[in-house]
Image 1 (cartoon, one colour):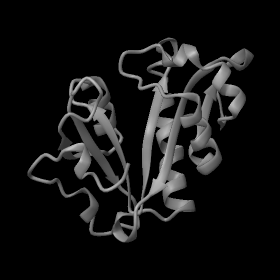
Image 2 (cartoon, helix red, strand yellow):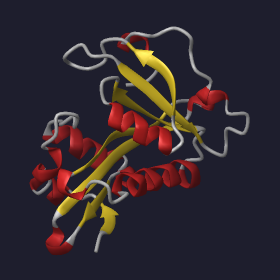
Image 3 (cartoon, rainbow, N blue to C red):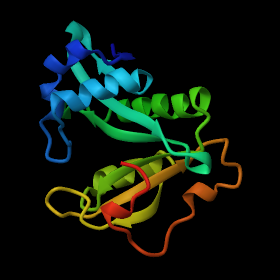
Length: 174
């Protein structure tokens, strides 16, 4: 049985099995601790029997005015637990927090353009490519900025795709 709960600082000592994937971005300890302190409602863990880490999601809320939104910083599921809809459940939790707690206009995320599996998964979750970000990743790979409108964005203006790519320094938020 899978339990979904808030991510804790103690989980940082037990989630290595989830991070062993080429597409999973890993960060330093202070990065995770900053998120836990500032946006604990956006940090969730999926765990199985014996408290085995199965997956997690980290996010935040940012922006001003109609750009007020939830951001998926990291979502990943350990290879042994994929195809169980855990990513769908974790994304749903983040979307619920964005809508119900923060009344955001949209949720966005960045994904490597080479990660076709993730792009397909996010598309199934209702996300669309908003723009391409040139050289976003450390190996100079481009990213897609994918977005999903929340109920507050009735006209869905937040997800109208841009025609030209942007550079990381042109992004509104970090």
